[in-house]
Length: 176
Image 1 (tube, one colour):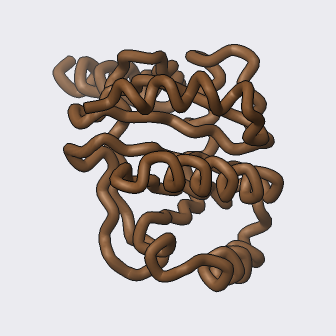
Image 2 (tube, one colour):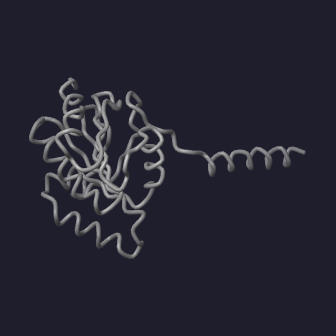
Image 3 (cartoon, rainbow, N blue to C red):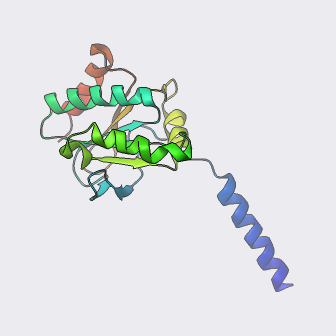
């Protein structure tokens, strides 16, 4: 009987792990912690206790958008940290290292230190973003503003236009 009880408990645990959906993110929520090797070889931890903008990209098209979000944010808020999460799990496995090398080659050493390339969890992050921000186009970059406590204060996405950047900029101005 104890073996049957243990087996039942194990099956319940396994089904809850495999079928759990990602928690949708909303403005005000804590940003899930990420810690991984940056493109420069150091460890990048997000959030890190400072106001930060995190740019997430899941496609090649998102790369151009990410560059625009980064450039505008760094120009207007030079003291603000901008980190990149680049997801390659939708790319064929045999191409991921070549893609990552190309991304790294196209960045300055300073950008490399603030960029992480991940080959897993892309679908989890897509669920988190699309569940909390209906209408977000995940074929483009998503910019997430975090306060010093790691809570989401604003989200912008798509190609950078004066209109969608203006609302994001207003939120950044309110960060301490």
